[in-house]
Length: 320
Length: 281
Image (cartoon, rainbow over all chains, first blue to last red; front, side, top):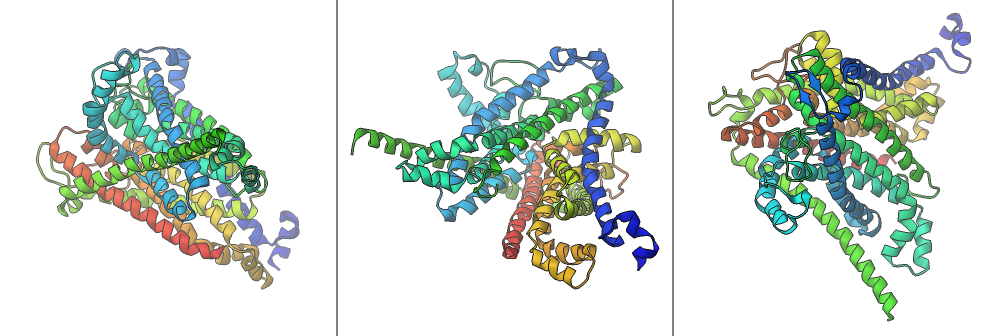
Protein backbone atom coordinates (compact mmCIF):
# COMPACT_ATOMS: atom_id res chain seq x y z
CA UNK A 1 0.00 0.00 0.00
CA UNK A 2 1.14 3.46 -0.91
CA UNK A 3 0.18 4.85 2.47
CA UNK A 4 2.17 2.16 4.25
CA UNK A 5 5.51 2.78 2.56
CA UNK A 6 5.24 6.52 2.77
CA UNK A 7 4.79 6.08 6.50
CA UNK A 8 1.76 8.24 5.89
CA UNK A 9 -0.42 6.24 8.19
CA UNK A 10 1.47 7.45 11.22
CA UNK A 11 1.85 10.95 9.86
CA UNK A 12 -1.73 11.61 8.83
CA UNK A 13 -3.73 9.60 11.37
CA UNK A 14 -5.02 6.09 11.10
CA UNK A 15 -8.41 5.76 9.47
CA UNK A 16 -8.11 7.84 6.32
CA UNK A 17 -6.05 7.14 3.25
CA UNK A 18 -3.48 9.56 1.87
CA UNK A 19 -5.70 10.84 -0.94
CA UNK A 20 -8.50 11.67 1.46
CA UNK A 21 -6.18 13.44 3.81
CA UNK A 22 -4.61 15.53 1.03
CA UNK A 23 -8.01 16.33 -0.42
CA UNK A 24 -9.30 17.42 2.94
CA UNK A 25 -6.26 19.59 3.56
CA UNK A 26 -6.34 21.23 0.15
CA UNK A 27 -10.05 22.07 0.33
CA UNK A 28 -9.48 23.33 3.89
CA UNK A 29 -6.89 25.71 2.43
CA UNK A 30 -9.58 27.27 0.23
CA UNK A 31 -11.98 27.61 3.16
CA UNK A 32 -9.15 29.23 5.09
CA UNK A 33 -8.53 31.56 2.16
CA UNK A 34 -11.94 33.20 2.66
CA UNK A 35 -11.00 34.15 6.20
CA UNK A 36 -7.53 35.27 5.12
CA UNK A 37 -9.03 37.40 2.35
CA UNK A 38 -11.32 39.20 4.79
CA UNK A 39 -8.41 39.82 7.16
CA UNK A 40 -6.24 41.00 4.25
CA UNK A 41 -8.92 43.51 3.27
CA UNK A 42 -9.02 44.94 6.77
CA UNK A 43 -5.24 45.13 6.93
CA UNK A 44 -4.69 46.59 3.45
CA UNK A 45 -7.33 49.28 3.94
CA UNK A 46 -5.98 50.23 7.34
CA UNK A 47 -2.51 50.59 5.80
CA UNK A 48 -3.84 52.60 2.88
CA UNK A 49 -5.48 55.07 5.25
CA UNK A 50 -2.70 55.15 7.88
CA UNK A 51 -1.42 58.56 6.84
CA UNK A 52 -4.83 60.17 7.17
CA UNK A 53 -5.62 58.40 10.45
CA UNK A 54 -2.41 59.54 12.10
CA UNK A 55 -2.62 63.09 10.77
CA UNK A 56 -6.27 63.90 11.51
CA UNK A 57 -7.28 61.39 14.19
CA UNK A 58 -10.81 61.96 15.38
CA UNK A 59 -11.09 65.39 13.78
CA UNK A 60 -11.51 63.49 10.51
CA UNK A 61 -15.04 62.76 11.67
CA UNK A 62 -15.86 66.08 13.32
CA UNK A 63 -14.50 68.61 10.83
CA UNK A 64 -16.42 69.73 7.75
CA UNK A 65 -13.38 71.13 6.02
CA UNK A 66 -12.67 68.94 2.94
CA UNK A 67 -10.09 70.88 0.99
CA UNK A 68 -7.69 68.96 -1.27
CA UNK A 69 -5.84 72.16 -2.17
CA UNK A 70 -4.84 72.87 1.42
CA UNK A 71 -4.60 69.14 2.23
CA UNK A 72 -7.25 69.33 4.93
CA UNK A 73 -9.73 66.51 5.16
CA UNK A 74 -12.78 66.53 7.43
CA UNK A 75 -15.46 64.05 6.45
CA UNK A 76 -18.41 65.19 8.55
CA UNK A 77 -20.66 66.19 5.60
CA UNK A 78 -20.09 62.80 3.96
CA UNK A 79 -20.76 60.91 7.17
CA UNK A 80 -23.91 62.97 7.60
CA UNK A 81 -24.98 62.27 4.01
CA UNK A 82 -24.43 58.54 4.41
CA UNK A 83 -26.27 58.31 7.73
CA UNK A 84 -29.14 60.59 6.72
CA UNK A 85 -29.76 58.90 3.36
CA UNK A 86 -29.68 55.45 4.98
CA UNK A 87 -32.03 56.45 7.80
CA UNK A 88 -34.41 57.97 5.27
CA UNK A 89 -34.22 54.77 3.22
CA UNK A 90 -35.02 52.66 6.28
CA UNK A 91 -37.94 54.91 7.22
CA UNK A 92 -39.43 54.32 3.79
CA UNK A 93 -38.46 50.68 3.26
CA UNK A 94 -39.06 49.03 6.63
CA UNK A 95 -42.87 49.41 6.85
CA UNK A 96 -43.29 48.33 3.23
CA UNK A 97 -40.88 45.40 3.56
CA UNK A 98 -42.64 44.19 6.71
CA UNK A 99 -45.98 44.35 4.92
CA UNK A 100 -44.57 42.28 2.08
CA UNK A 101 -43.03 39.70 4.37
CA UNK A 102 -46.21 39.29 6.42
CA UNK A 103 -48.13 38.92 3.17
CA UNK A 104 -45.69 36.38 1.69
CA UNK A 105 -45.30 34.37 4.86
CA UNK A 106 -48.77 34.49 6.41
CA UNK A 107 -51.49 35.71 4.10
CA UNK A 108 -50.85 34.98 0.45
CA UNK A 109 -52.47 31.96 -1.19
CA UNK A 110 -49.94 29.21 -1.84
CA UNK A 111 -49.94 29.66 -5.61
CA UNK A 112 -48.89 33.32 -5.47
CA UNK A 113 -46.12 32.78 -2.92
CA UNK A 114 -43.34 31.57 -5.20
CA UNK A 115 -43.95 33.90 -8.14
CA UNK A 116 -44.22 36.90 -5.81
CA UNK A 117 -41.06 35.96 -3.93
CA UNK A 118 -39.30 35.65 -7.26
CA UNK A 119 -40.47 39.07 -8.39
CA UNK A 120 -39.27 40.66 -5.15
CA UNK A 121 -35.91 38.93 -5.59
CA UNK A 122 -35.77 40.23 -9.15
CA UNK A 123 -35.84 43.75 -7.75
CA UNK A 124 -32.63 42.84 -5.90
CA UNK A 125 -31.06 41.62 -9.13
CA UNK A 126 -31.32 44.92 -10.99
CA UNK A 127 -27.84 46.50 -11.10
CA UNK A 128 -27.28 49.65 -9.10
CA UNK A 129 -26.23 51.66 -12.14
CA UNK A 130 -29.56 50.92 -13.80
CA UNK A 131 -31.45 52.26 -10.80
CA UNK A 132 -29.19 55.30 -11.10
CA UNK A 133 -30.07 55.78 -14.75
CA UNK A 134 -33.77 55.46 -13.91
CA UNK A 135 -33.24 57.90 -11.05
CA UNK A 136 -31.61 60.55 -13.23
CA UNK A 137 -34.18 60.51 -16.02
CA UNK A 138 -37.42 59.53 -14.24
CA UNK A 139 -37.35 59.74 -10.47
CA UNK A 140 -35.53 63.07 -10.14
CA UNK A 141 -37.64 64.92 -12.74
CA UNK A 142 -40.82 63.49 -11.21
CA UNK A 143 -39.76 64.63 -7.74
CA UNK A 144 -38.81 68.07 -9.06
CA UNK A 145 -42.02 68.67 -10.97
CA UNK A 146 -44.70 66.90 -8.93
CA UNK A 147 -43.71 65.69 -5.51
CA UNK A 148 -41.46 68.40 -4.13
CA UNK A 149 -43.65 71.38 -5.12
CA UNK A 150 -46.64 69.64 -3.51
CA UNK A 151 -44.68 68.86 -0.35
CA UNK A 152 -43.32 72.41 -0.18
CA UNK A 153 -46.79 73.87 -0.56
CA UNK A 154 -48.46 71.77 2.11
CA UNK A 155 -45.66 71.03 4.55
CA UNK A 156 -43.26 73.84 3.70
CA UNK A 157 -43.30 75.16 7.28
CA UNK A 158 -41.38 72.04 8.26
CA UNK A 159 -37.59 72.31 7.82
CA UNK A 160 -37.45 68.94 6.05
CA UNK A 161 -39.52 70.24 3.15
CA UNK A 162 -38.05 73.69 2.65
CA UNK A 163 -35.96 74.78 -0.27
CA UNK A 164 -35.89 74.86 -4.03
CA UNK A 165 -37.23 71.69 -5.65
CA UNK A 166 -34.29 70.32 -7.60
CA UNK A 167 -35.12 66.65 -7.86
CA UNK A 168 -31.53 65.63 -7.31
CA UNK A 169 -30.78 65.47 -3.60
CA UNK A 170 -31.33 63.66 -0.34
CA UNK A 171 -34.95 62.69 -1.05
CA UNK A 172 -34.12 61.05 -4.38
CA UNK A 173 -31.20 59.18 -2.78
CA UNK A 174 -33.37 57.98 0.10
CA UNK A 175 -36.08 56.71 -2.23
CA UNK A 176 -33.64 54.87 -4.52
CA UNK A 177 -31.90 53.32 -1.53
CA UNK A 178 -35.26 52.28 -0.10
CA UNK A 179 -36.11 50.48 -3.34
CA UNK A 180 -32.74 48.75 -3.34
CA UNK A 181 -32.82 47.50 0.26
CA UNK A 182 -36.49 46.55 0.20
CA UNK A 183 -35.90 43.04 -1.24
CA UNK A 184 -33.17 42.27 1.31
CA UNK A 185 -35.32 43.23 4.29
CA UNK A 186 -38.46 41.60 2.86
CA UNK A 187 -36.76 38.30 1.96
CA UNK A 188 -34.91 37.88 5.25
CA UNK A 189 -37.95 38.82 7.38
CA UNK A 190 -40.12 36.44 5.38
CA UNK A 191 -37.67 33.59 6.06
CA UNK A 192 -37.56 34.52 9.73
CA UNK A 193 -41.35 34.54 9.99
CA UNK A 194 -41.55 31.15 8.26
CA UNK A 195 -39.12 29.87 10.87
CA UNK A 196 -41.62 30.55 13.66
CA UNK A 197 -43.12 27.16 14.56
CA UNK A 198 -46.55 26.37 13.12
CA UNK A 199 -47.85 25.31 16.50
CA UNK A 200 -47.69 28.89 17.77
CA UNK A 201 -49.99 30.04 14.97
CA UNK A 202 -52.35 27.13 15.45
CA UNK A 203 -52.56 27.92 19.14
CA UNK A 204 -53.56 31.51 18.48
CA UNK A 205 -56.06 30.56 15.77
CA UNK A 206 -57.60 27.92 18.02
CA UNK A 207 -58.22 30.58 20.65
CA UNK A 208 -60.27 32.50 18.10
CA UNK A 209 -57.68 35.08 17.05
CA UNK A 210 -58.11 36.69 13.64
CA UNK A 211 -55.32 36.30 11.10
CA UNK A 212 -53.82 39.66 11.98
CA UNK A 213 -54.02 38.94 15.71
CA UNK A 214 -52.26 35.64 15.06
CA UNK A 215 -49.48 37.49 13.28
CA UNK A 216 -49.26 40.03 16.09
CA UNK A 217 -49.32 37.69 19.09
CA UNK A 218 -47.85 34.46 17.72
CA UNK A 219 -45.51 35.37 14.87
CA UNK A 220 -44.08 38.84 15.35
CA UNK A 221 -42.90 38.49 18.98
CA UNK A 222 -40.81 35.44 18.11
CA UNK A 223 -39.62 36.82 14.80
CA UNK A 224 -38.63 40.23 16.18
CA UNK A 225 -34.90 39.57 16.72
CA UNK A 226 -34.67 38.21 13.18
CA UNK A 227 -36.60 41.14 11.76
CA UNK A 228 -34.23 43.52 13.52
CA UNK A 229 -31.44 41.49 11.93
CA UNK A 230 -33.07 41.90 8.51
CA UNK A 231 -33.33 45.66 9.02
CA UNK A 232 -29.67 45.84 10.04
CA UNK A 233 -28.70 43.88 6.91
CA UNK A 234 -30.66 46.42 4.89
CA UNK A 235 -28.94 49.27 6.70
CA UNK A 236 -25.57 47.72 5.87
CA UNK A 237 -26.46 47.63 2.19
CA UNK A 238 -27.74 51.20 2.26
CA UNK A 239 -24.60 52.60 3.90
CA UNK A 240 -22.28 51.14 1.29
CA UNK A 241 -24.43 51.53 -1.80
CA UNK A 242 -22.57 53.68 -4.27
CA UNK A 243 -23.60 54.09 -7.87
CA UNK A 244 -27.33 54.79 -7.72
CA UNK A 245 -26.79 57.26 -4.87
CA UNK A 246 -23.90 59.01 -6.59
CA UNK A 247 -26.07 59.49 -9.65
CA UNK A 248 -29.03 61.14 -7.88
CA UNK A 249 -27.83 62.76 -4.67
CA UNK A 250 -26.44 65.89 -6.31
CA UNK A 251 -22.90 65.46 -4.93
CA UNK A 252 -22.46 68.57 -2.82
CA UNK A 253 -20.71 68.26 0.52
CA UNK A 254 -23.11 70.11 2.78
CA UNK A 255 -25.20 69.46 5.84
CA UNK A 256 -28.75 70.63 5.33
CA UNK A 257 -31.96 69.91 7.20
CA UNK A 258 -33.92 69.96 3.95
CA UNK A 259 -34.66 66.73 2.08
CA UNK A 260 -34.62 68.71 -1.15
CA UNK A 261 -31.00 69.80 -0.77
CA UNK A 262 -28.19 68.05 -2.61
CA UNK A 263 -25.72 66.15 -0.43
CA UNK A 264 -22.88 63.66 -0.76
CA UNK A 265 -22.15 60.33 0.91
CA UNK A 266 -18.93 58.60 1.88
CA UNK A 267 -19.35 56.12 -0.95
CA UNK A 268 -20.23 58.79 -3.50
CA UNK A 269 -17.20 60.94 -2.73
CA UNK A 270 -14.96 57.89 -3.09
CA UNK A 271 -16.53 57.08 -6.47
CA UNK A 272 -16.19 60.68 -7.64
CA UNK A 273 -12.72 61.53 -6.41
CA UNK A 274 -10.66 58.35 -6.04
CA UNK A 275 -9.19 58.37 -9.52
CA UNK A 276 -8.49 62.09 -9.29
CA UNK A 277 -6.78 62.04 -5.92
CA UNK A 278 -3.57 63.87 -6.63
CA UNK A 279 -1.64 63.36 -3.41
CA UNK A 280 -0.94 60.48 -1.05
CA UNK A 281 -2.78 62.17 1.80
CA UNK A 282 -5.84 62.75 -0.40
CA UNK A 283 -5.87 59.07 -1.35
CA UNK A 284 -5.39 58.08 2.29
CA UNK A 285 -8.32 60.25 3.36
CA UNK A 286 -10.58 58.65 0.75
CA UNK A 287 -9.33 55.20 1.76
CA UNK A 288 -10.16 56.02 5.37
CA UNK A 289 -13.77 56.65 4.30
CA UNK A 290 -13.71 53.22 2.65
CA UNK A 291 -12.22 51.66 5.77
CA UNK A 292 -14.96 53.22 7.91
CA UNK A 293 -17.66 51.85 5.60
CA UNK A 294 -15.96 48.45 5.64
CA UNK A 295 -15.70 48.35 9.43
CA UNK A 296 -19.25 49.58 10.06
CA UNK A 297 -20.83 47.17 7.56
CA UNK A 298 -18.86 44.23 8.99
CA UNK A 299 -20.03 45.01 12.52
CA UNK A 300 -23.61 45.43 11.30
CA UNK A 301 -23.45 42.17 9.37
CA UNK A 302 -22.13 40.20 12.30
CA UNK A 303 -24.86 41.60 14.55
CA UNK A 304 -27.53 40.87 11.94
CA UNK A 305 -26.40 37.27 11.34
CA UNK A 306 -26.42 36.53 15.05
CA UNK A 307 -29.96 37.90 15.40
CA UNK A 308 -31.26 35.96 12.39
CA UNK A 309 -29.61 32.75 13.61
CA UNK A 310 -31.35 33.10 16.95
CA UNK A 311 -34.78 32.91 15.34
CA UNK A 312 -33.98 30.23 12.77
CA UNK A 313 -32.98 27.88 15.59
CA UNK A 314 -36.48 27.83 17.12
CA UNK A 315 -37.60 24.17 17.30
CA UNK A 316 -40.29 23.07 14.88
CA UNK A 317 -40.14 25.99 12.43
CA UNK A 318 -39.56 25.88 8.71
CA UNK A 319 -35.89 26.13 7.80
CA UNK A 320 -34.92 29.78 7.38
CA UNK B 1 -72.25 40.55 16.20
CA UNK B 2 -70.96 42.59 19.09
CA UNK B 3 -69.00 45.79 18.69
CA UNK B 4 -65.68 44.39 19.90
CA UNK B 5 -65.71 41.56 17.40
CA UNK B 6 -66.63 43.95 14.65
CA UNK B 7 -63.71 46.16 15.55
CA UNK B 8 -61.35 43.19 15.59
CA UNK B 9 -62.53 42.02 12.20
CA UNK B 10 -62.24 45.52 10.79
CA UNK B 11 -58.69 45.78 12.07
CA UNK B 12 -57.89 42.37 10.59
CA UNK B 13 -59.18 43.50 7.22
CA UNK B 14 -57.30 46.78 7.44
CA UNK B 15 -53.96 45.17 8.26
CA UNK B 16 -54.39 42.52 5.59
CA UNK B 17 -55.20 45.25 3.12
CA UNK B 18 -52.08 47.16 4.19
CA UNK B 19 -49.91 44.10 3.57
CA UNK B 20 -51.37 43.61 0.10
CA UNK B 21 -50.90 47.32 -0.60
CA UNK B 22 -47.25 47.14 0.49
CA UNK B 23 -46.65 44.23 -1.88
CA UNK B 24 -48.26 46.07 -4.78
CA UNK B 25 -46.32 49.24 -3.91
CA UNK B 26 -43.03 47.35 -4.12
CA UNK B 27 -43.88 46.17 -7.62
CA UNK B 28 -44.28 49.73 -8.91
CA UNK B 29 -40.56 50.61 -9.11
CA UNK B 30 -39.79 47.20 -10.62
CA UNK B 31 -42.40 47.62 -13.32
CA UNK B 32 -41.38 51.23 -13.89
CA UNK B 33 -37.68 50.37 -14.28
CA UNK B 34 -38.39 47.45 -16.60
CA UNK B 35 -40.89 49.48 -18.63
CA UNK B 36 -38.70 52.54 -19.16
CA UNK B 37 -35.55 50.54 -19.87
CA UNK B 38 -37.47 48.52 -22.43
CA UNK B 39 -39.13 51.59 -23.99
CA UNK B 40 -36.14 53.93 -24.09
CA UNK B 41 -33.68 51.12 -24.73
CA UNK B 42 -35.52 49.62 -27.68
CA UNK B 43 -36.56 53.04 -28.95
CA UNK B 44 -33.13 54.19 -30.10
CA UNK B 45 -31.63 50.73 -30.39
CA UNK B 46 -29.37 49.83 -33.24
CA UNK B 47 -27.37 46.63 -33.77
CA UNK B 48 -24.58 48.90 -34.75
CA UNK B 49 -24.19 49.79 -31.03
CA UNK B 50 -23.11 46.26 -30.20
CA UNK B 51 -20.27 46.17 -32.69
CA UNK B 52 -18.78 49.63 -32.88
CA UNK B 53 -16.50 51.80 -30.79
CA UNK B 54 -17.68 54.94 -29.00
CA UNK B 55 -17.53 58.02 -31.22
CA UNK B 56 -15.07 60.76 -30.28
CA UNK B 57 -16.51 63.19 -27.72
CA UNK B 58 -18.92 65.64 -29.35
CA UNK B 59 -19.62 63.51 -32.42
CA UNK B 60 -22.87 61.64 -32.97
CA UNK B 61 -23.03 57.88 -33.42
CA UNK B 62 -20.70 55.19 -32.24
CA UNK B 63 -21.58 52.32 -29.95
CA UNK B 64 -20.47 50.27 -26.99
CA UNK B 65 -19.08 47.09 -28.55
CA UNK B 66 -15.84 47.49 -26.63
CA UNK B 67 -17.74 47.81 -23.33
CA UNK B 68 -19.71 44.65 -24.09
CA UNK B 69 -16.51 42.76 -24.87
CA UNK B 70 -14.85 44.25 -21.80
CA UNK B 71 -17.65 43.10 -19.53
CA UNK B 72 -17.35 39.58 -20.94
CA UNK B 73 -13.59 39.61 -20.34
CA UNK B 74 -13.96 40.93 -16.79
CA UNK B 75 -16.69 38.47 -15.85
CA UNK B 76 -14.65 35.70 -17.48
CA UNK B 77 -11.60 36.51 -15.35
CA UNK B 78 -13.76 36.80 -12.24
CA UNK B 79 -15.45 33.42 -12.86
CA UNK B 80 -12.14 31.72 -13.62
CA UNK B 81 -10.93 32.79 -10.18
CA UNK B 82 -14.07 32.67 -8.04
CA UNK B 83 -15.71 29.46 -9.31
CA UNK B 84 -12.92 26.91 -8.63
CA UNK B 85 -11.98 28.63 -5.38
CA UNK B 86 -15.56 28.89 -4.24
CA UNK B 87 -16.50 25.33 -5.18
CA UNK B 88 -13.50 23.82 -3.39
CA UNK B 89 -14.14 25.91 -0.29
CA UNK B 90 -17.80 24.86 -0.43
CA UNK B 91 -16.81 21.18 -0.72
CA UNK B 92 -14.84 21.57 2.47
CA UNK B 93 -17.71 23.35 4.25
CA UNK B 94 -20.29 20.77 3.19
CA UNK B 95 -18.24 17.60 3.67
CA UNK B 96 -15.86 18.39 6.52
CA UNK B 97 -17.05 21.75 7.80
CA UNK B 98 -18.69 20.79 11.09
CA UNK B 99 -15.80 22.25 13.04
CA UNK B 100 -14.36 25.57 14.08
CA UNK B 101 -12.71 26.33 10.73
CA UNK B 102 -15.96 25.54 8.93
CA UNK B 103 -18.00 27.84 11.14
CA UNK B 104 -15.47 30.63 10.84
CA UNK B 105 -15.21 30.32 7.04
CA UNK B 106 -19.00 30.24 6.66
CA UNK B 107 -19.27 33.32 8.84
CA UNK B 108 -16.52 35.08 6.88
CA UNK B 109 -18.32 34.33 3.61
CA UNK B 110 -21.59 35.74 4.98
CA UNK B 111 -19.86 38.85 6.27
CA UNK B 112 -17.97 39.29 3.01
CA UNK B 113 -21.27 39.23 1.12
CA UNK B 114 -22.18 42.41 2.97
CA UNK B 115 -18.94 44.32 2.35
CA UNK B 116 -19.69 47.35 0.14
CA UNK B 117 -18.40 46.82 -3.37
CA UNK B 118 -16.62 50.17 -3.29
CA UNK B 119 -14.53 48.96 -0.34
CA UNK B 120 -13.52 45.94 -2.41
CA UNK B 121 -12.45 48.40 -5.10
CA UNK B 122 -10.23 50.28 -2.65
CA UNK B 123 -8.69 47.00 -1.48
CA UNK B 124 -7.91 45.87 -5.03
CA UNK B 125 -6.58 49.33 -5.89
CA UNK B 126 -4.14 49.14 -2.97
CA UNK B 127 -3.04 45.57 -3.59
CA UNK B 128 -3.16 45.07 -7.37
CA UNK B 129 -3.40 48.43 -9.15
CA UNK B 130 -0.53 50.01 -7.22
CA UNK B 131 1.58 46.87 -7.62
CA UNK B 132 0.96 46.73 -11.38
CA UNK B 133 1.44 50.49 -11.66
CA UNK B 134 -1.82 51.05 -13.47
CA UNK B 135 -5.46 50.20 -14.00
CA UNK B 136 -5.95 46.82 -15.65
CA UNK B 137 -8.50 44.23 -16.68
CA UNK B 138 -6.85 41.81 -14.24
CA UNK B 139 -7.49 44.17 -11.33
CA UNK B 140 -11.13 44.61 -12.36
CA UNK B 141 -11.57 40.85 -12.72
CA UNK B 142 -10.10 40.23 -9.27
CA UNK B 143 -12.41 42.83 -7.71
CA UNK B 144 -15.43 41.13 -9.30
CA UNK B 145 -14.12 37.71 -8.21
CA UNK B 146 -14.05 38.84 -4.57
CA UNK B 147 -17.65 40.01 -4.93
CA UNK B 148 -18.70 36.69 -6.51
CA UNK B 149 -16.94 34.43 -4.03
CA UNK B 150 -19.46 34.53 -1.13
CA UNK B 151 -22.43 33.74 -3.41
CA UNK B 152 -20.61 30.83 -5.05
CA UNK B 153 -19.48 29.40 -1.70
CA UNK B 154 -22.81 29.54 0.09
CA UNK B 155 -25.04 28.33 -2.77
CA UNK B 156 -22.63 25.52 -3.67
CA UNK B 157 -22.44 24.39 -0.06
CA UNK B 158 -26.23 24.24 0.18
CA UNK B 159 -26.41 22.20 -3.02
CA UNK B 160 -23.74 19.73 -2.03
CA UNK B 161 -25.64 19.13 1.20
CA UNK B 162 -28.74 18.30 -0.86
CA UNK B 163 -27.02 15.38 -2.61
CA UNK B 164 -28.56 12.27 -1.00
CA UNK B 165 -26.18 10.41 1.28
CA UNK B 166 -27.24 7.13 -0.33
CA UNK B 167 -25.21 8.17 -3.38
CA UNK B 168 -22.13 8.76 -1.21
CA UNK B 169 -22.64 5.49 0.58
CA UNK B 170 -23.01 3.60 -2.69
CA UNK B 171 -19.68 4.98 -3.85
CA UNK B 172 -17.93 4.27 -0.57
CA UNK B 173 -19.37 0.76 -0.47
CA UNK B 174 -17.68 0.04 -3.80
CA UNK B 175 -14.39 0.81 -2.11
CA UNK B 176 -13.85 4.16 -3.79
CA UNK B 177 -11.81 6.56 -1.66
CA UNK B 178 -13.84 9.39 -0.16
CA UNK B 179 -12.14 12.13 -2.17
CA UNK B 180 -12.98 10.40 -5.44
CA UNK B 181 -16.56 9.88 -4.30
CA UNK B 182 -16.82 13.60 -3.55
CA UNK B 183 -15.34 14.71 -6.88
CA UNK B 184 -16.89 12.09 -9.15
CA UNK B 185 -20.27 11.52 -7.49
CA UNK B 186 -21.21 14.34 -5.15
CA UNK B 187 -19.87 17.32 -7.09
CA UNK B 188 -21.08 15.91 -10.38
CA UNK B 189 -24.58 15.27 -9.06
CA UNK B 190 -24.72 18.74 -7.61
CA UNK B 191 -23.33 20.38 -10.77
CA UNK B 192 -26.62 21.65 -12.27
CA UNK B 193 -27.45 23.25 -8.95
CA UNK B 194 -24.01 24.77 -8.69
CA UNK B 195 -24.57 26.29 -12.10
CA UNK B 196 -27.42 28.19 -10.46
CA UNK B 197 -25.14 29.68 -7.84
CA UNK B 198 -22.56 30.59 -10.44
CA UNK B 199 -25.17 32.22 -12.67
CA UNK B 200 -26.49 34.32 -9.80
CA UNK B 201 -22.97 35.34 -8.86
CA UNK B 202 -22.15 36.21 -12.49
CA UNK B 203 -25.36 38.25 -12.70
CA UNK B 204 -24.33 40.22 -9.64
CA UNK B 205 -20.77 40.74 -10.88
CA UNK B 206 -21.87 41.79 -14.36
CA UNK B 207 -23.82 44.73 -12.97
CA UNK B 208 -21.19 45.97 -10.52
CA UNK B 209 -19.90 49.42 -11.29
CA UNK B 210 -18.32 51.01 -8.24
CA UNK B 211 -15.27 48.74 -7.85
CA UNK B 212 -14.50 48.95 -11.57
CA UNK B 213 -14.17 52.74 -11.54
CA UNK B 214 -10.68 52.52 -10.11
CA UNK B 215 -9.59 49.00 -11.00
CA UNK B 216 -10.53 48.30 -14.64
CA UNK B 217 -11.09 52.05 -15.14
CA UNK B 218 -12.37 52.25 -18.71
CA UNK B 219 -11.13 52.41 -22.24
CA UNK B 220 -12.55 53.99 -25.37
CA UNK B 221 -10.96 51.44 -27.68
CA UNK B 222 -11.02 47.69 -28.28
CA UNK B 223 -8.79 46.01 -25.77
CA UNK B 224 -8.17 42.42 -24.82
CA UNK B 225 -4.82 43.06 -23.18
CA UNK B 226 -5.37 42.03 -19.58
CA UNK B 227 -2.66 44.38 -18.33
CA UNK B 228 -4.40 47.41 -19.81
CA UNK B 229 -7.48 49.30 -18.64
CA UNK B 230 -10.66 47.89 -20.13
CA UNK B 231 -14.17 49.20 -20.75
CA UNK B 232 -17.26 47.62 -19.20
CA UNK B 233 -20.99 48.01 -19.70
CA UNK B 234 -21.85 49.33 -16.21
CA UNK B 235 -19.09 51.96 -16.25
CA UNK B 236 -20.11 52.88 -19.79
CA UNK B 237 -23.72 53.35 -18.69
CA UNK B 238 -22.60 55.50 -15.77
CA UNK B 239 -20.32 57.72 -17.86
CA UNK B 240 -22.92 58.20 -20.56
CA UNK B 241 -25.81 58.74 -18.13
CA UNK B 242 -24.08 61.59 -16.29
CA UNK B 243 -22.79 63.18 -19.49
CA UNK B 244 -24.48 66.30 -20.89
CA UNK B 245 -25.08 64.86 -24.40
CA UNK B 246 -28.54 63.79 -25.58
CA UNK B 247 -27.11 61.17 -27.95
CA UNK B 248 -25.08 59.60 -25.13
CA UNK B 249 -28.20 59.35 -22.98
CA UNK B 250 -29.91 57.28 -25.69
CA UNK B 251 -26.91 55.01 -25.83
CA UNK B 252 -26.91 54.69 -22.03
CA UNK B 253 -30.50 53.43 -22.18
CA UNK B 254 -29.63 50.93 -24.90
CA UNK B 255 -26.58 49.72 -22.97
CA UNK B 256 -28.76 49.43 -19.86
CA UNK B 257 -31.23 47.32 -21.84
CA UNK B 258 -28.45 44.95 -22.90
CA UNK B 259 -27.12 44.71 -19.34
CA UNK B 260 -30.55 44.27 -17.80
CA UNK B 261 -31.54 41.57 -20.29
CA UNK B 262 -28.35 39.61 -19.56
CA UNK B 263 -28.90 39.89 -15.81
CA UNK B 264 -32.55 38.89 -16.06
CA UNK B 265 -31.80 35.94 -18.35
CA UNK B 266 -29.18 34.70 -15.88
CA UNK B 267 -31.62 35.05 -12.98
CA UNK B 268 -34.55 33.38 -14.71
CA UNK B 269 -32.24 30.67 -16.07
CA UNK B 270 -30.93 30.01 -12.57
CA UNK B 271 -34.50 29.74 -11.38
CA UNK B 272 -35.41 27.19 -14.05
CA UNK B 273 -32.37 25.04 -13.31
CA UNK B 274 -33.18 25.05 -9.59
CA UNK B 275 -36.67 23.88 -10.32
CA UNK B 276 -35.37 20.94 -12.35
CA UNK B 277 -32.66 20.18 -9.81
CA UNK B 278 -35.33 20.30 -7.12
CA UNK B 279 -36.20 16.69 -7.95
CA UNK B 280 -32.95 15.75 -6.26
CA UNK B 281 -34.59 16.29 -2.92
